[in-house]
Amino acid sequence: MSGRMHRGWHGPGGRGARGPGRGGWQQADLPGAEDASAWLHGRLPDGWFVGLPDVTIDREEIVVVGELPPVEGEFEDTEAGRAEAAAAIAGRISRFREQTREERIEIARQAEHRYQRKVAWGARIGEVVELFTTASVPVMTRLRQPERIVLDTLVDSGVARSRSDALAWAVRLVGQHAEEWLGELRTAMAKVDELRAKGPGTSGP
Image (cartoon, rainbow, N blue to C red):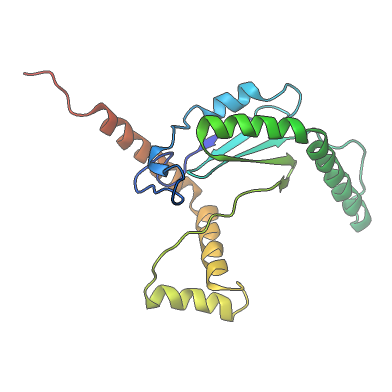
């Protein structure tokens, strides 16, 4: 499995970034995190994961999710067998979390100092992914009545518990069904950032 780095909507230190509050660092002043994936791949101990972990980055957080070795043993394709397999996977992930806790804390401390972003961890076995403590970042926005009606419909139907929960649900849904388009958009935005950094050519005719 190859490691991947995903940038947030505006990219690290991107447009429209604002600081978290009085006395704190400003997001506009965030150090670049383009090399964070490579740094983490080099910093992680050998043998933690099968292949390179996935590294996802936005303006607030770096999330590292690695593949663990599959659990041993054969499980029957029955309800009881599937329950046993799920329990074995949960136990394997729990063991990894406990055994690596202190070293993960130290790696996170170094990465947070280097990139000024919180670091969260997760583990995957097959199709099962468990994220450990991750950041929940509030996002303020203004919505007109048609958008509010959409959120209220999700709440009234029981799909979401509140407007904020409905908004998060909608964002997840877009991410699931538009990943290819979002990837192309991020690539295009990265190209624009590169061109902006280069500036206009200075050579004459």
